[in-house]
Length: 584
Image 1 (cartoon, helix red, strand yellow):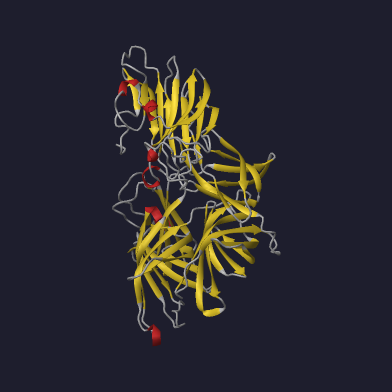
Image 2 (tube, rainbow, N blue to C red; image 1 turned 45 degrees about the vertical axis):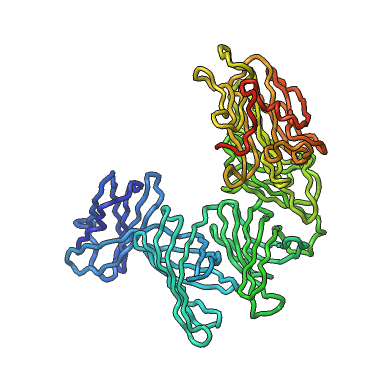
């Protein structure tokens, strides 16, 4: 008989609540002990007395660290030969890396390549994984985890000359097991491939998914400025968030929530010596029966890369349908901040029937495929007012961009004004101006005015905010992906409010039609109700759009364009002129 002292640690992570050690081996019954960490920084697990471990070779000590919910957060194992004397066994605990991963690599002196997709399996400190190379060849590998360090080897890899070129990757684990980074090396080989390769790599774990895409699919690619190609018939096999496919194309990929990434390769014009790698990203529709997104190509053949869109439909592969499919895509943002809204629901209906739906990605984007036609699109998420857009036209073999700005539900008595426009039509910088009655006791001459000017975004009196320009937009890089400006009347005062939109880009022009052609739109929310929607008049000159007046809860449309920019100067700013550059 023998005794054994288990893992001792000087820094047990705060997330660990219990550690369970299981001992097994030939000719013995499995034994297990559980220790409540209870905030200890040092623990010792001892097998002795009635639970002593029988002598024998190759006893396996497997330890798992669990959080307060019982979920395993770290694990590790070690083996020891017991000969009758007390033995100390040290178990190096590490992150659990089992699951689907996408990996990018950057050869020294070159640009980043990939991704490649791995399905990792971990037992204790030992790793094994499989993946499909870009040419459809299946590879296997193995490795180990030691605390936050990881090492992986792909022994059956080959170089571009089809010579054996195993790859060794070493690195560290970050973000609590969500990412890995490191360096890699391949040995030199003979012939034209005599030089080995070194570089860096980074891997990202796919998050869990509820979608099952196993089965047959029909895929279609539409190169930019080209016509749709397909169908490509493929059969998908899914394991957790990792999947492989065979058929007209062979490859692999990952599902992360409803986001999908995969790759396959093809010969360039029948030239088997030149391989083009196709990398596809997109989303799976809510019903799991269709997917769509964008693709790019890469090659080492000197052929210009190609980009475009793709769609796939689940079911038996058949001849391509008429080219009537179109794509609806865009970005959903927060009206108050301009930031992207992830997890928002996009639902497309036609005559009351749901045609397609999607959930926005972390960057607020979505993409849906559907037959050409006219639809209604609704955008919703918890805590925001639903935005519904009618008469959305989808063209055959084309993409319609439809962005949505969602307003957080205002409190009672608030009035929120949201301005949006199409930045691609003239790259305009439009600005919101609200003029209104001053608070009781404020004897300043003229109405207040909120606008982008320094110190003028907020109107307050005696410590109370009555109105403010919540979000001012100038360009995509600085102020968010969707052109939008938002103004809120926090506390309404008796009297008349006026709302204007100014074309700052064309300040001083008497003949500009840019504002008229910007498709600018203003939505007015009174409480949680959309009270009015105004569209800029078309085919008219002017840099100032007088949109509406408000007295009480009912906006009254004005909806006129003019070149008289003096209306933007409140009485308290008489004699001042519009700034030539914005002061942020």
